[in-house]
Image (tube, rainbow, N blue to C red; front, side, top):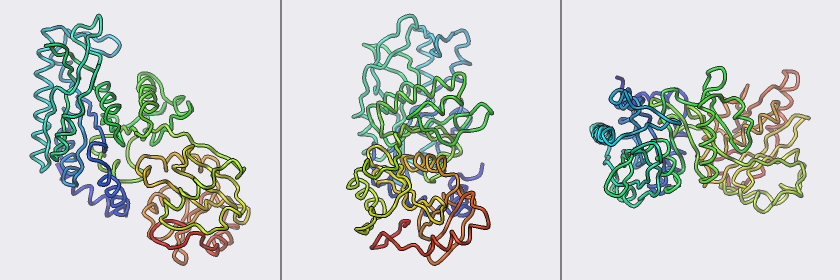
Length: 425
């Protein structure tokens, strides 16, 4: 197997994403250790790709990042408990079967922790994390009643990745718990920036079997493209995001964990519940909050007259954690500002706002400073680009006969942010 770290470094070199990696690394390392991420790994994926997963987690450990890992064991238990049946996706578990469940989970957890350590990381199995009560009619299957996050915090504070098995304590016995449910309850307790769900499919599939790169669940539009059991899973994720609104859910593959975490475009399906608003009336906007957002995002001061200029539309997150300001150049929509607060960078908010921008303005032009870490994202998501006088100018769906004059007009626009550091104008 080729070294995963080597593959990732090759990926950064070939795609020009080193600036994105540095941006996300800075964000993650400034996040409290316990708030980084919960990673839930399906039993089948762990069975087939434990080395890949362990190497990825070890690499995160070397960067000072310690996710909480929750694993399943469905495929192994299917083989060992062939006579057991499932009701509503939950395995009916007898007292005898529960002994097998405990043994399997203990073995998987210890093997994963050992593998992480063998790749130079640091990990420890976390025991007695969940308490539960029996679900009637399912035998030794439990509904979670409590999460002891202090033990997880202690492990992480000692610079180790906690590995959690989905079993819950009930009086003096143990109960089998659905791994997805365990991960969700941990997220509710820990409130991390992300929940990564590592699956065989590597994302949510649409009706054509293709991975959907992004879903914003603030409305029901995206759910129309999901069918079968996956629709139920997405609805459960939506319920989770309504409880923990600052968390994002990512469904990806074992191979793409690092690419998902450290690049803007990511891999797999990024799911968030952002409430994106739009208005053409500046009087509907809290200009003070919008100004603070832009200056916070760009680390620059906005010129005093900026909001006196004409604006075509303002697209913004309801709490002013992100916004896009559309103006017009040569009768062509011009993305004049695209800002996400530092607190929300890395949460997918920028993706939500960008999706709204391109949906409303398929024909568009914008410019970005040459050292902007988001340039690689614009390159992938815009039809054309040209370098001009310190700027990269991007566009979508502009006819050749009007493109040159539009580029010239954008290049000549006065800067409206001062004290230039490293963001787009």
